[in-house]
Image (cartoon, rainbow, N blue to C red; front, side, top):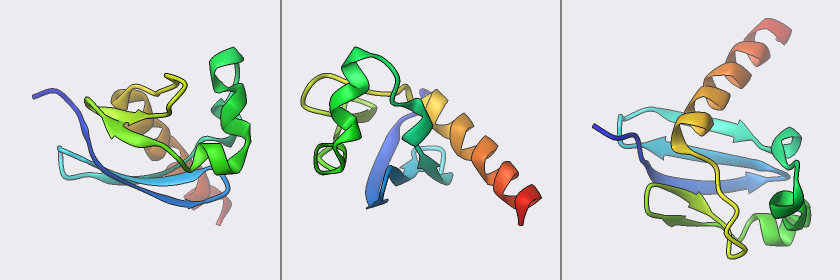
Length: 86
């Protein structure tokens, strides 16, 4: 089975809660991932929150997107870091 983002909800700042077709739910903070020309417009929070689910992941109108596998792993990594810091 290919990993897909089934649902996504903007939480504020650069955080998005994602539900994957695997049944997993992860919250990702993409603030540190907005590197490069295609991601520059996403630094504007009003543009950042305008993503849509397209094909199997979240995508913005300028074509910027993140692979669902990257998003899932980032969510796992950030959750682990948050547990250690808590």
